[in-house]
Image 1: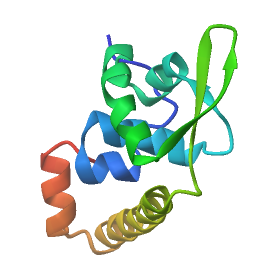
Image 2: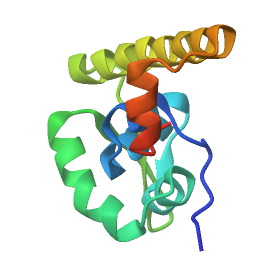
Image 3: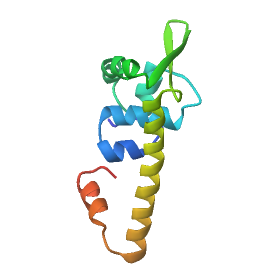
Image 4: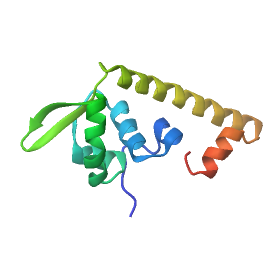
Length: 125
């Protein structure tokens, strides 16, 4: 059974196709709010175990930060004060625009763009 996600495929997932990219796509897109690990797993479409394995790395880099506790659940948020996080948010914005432009160009011309063809063949779009 496929996991339900808040986003179909985000730009970072399209570029990198990894669980970390899925997590970051979700956190960047909804960065105004904080989420528990289980919410992040469910909404990004990765397993809870994967989130448990990847979070220490993301926290050490300062990309995410612990914001508060709600009962026993720790809440986390994308940290826009961190330079790496800011760069990732900008990369996501650029990637989203580029993919959108390439798809429009492909639709208009009827010709497949090499970048789009490779990404589609690799199931990244």
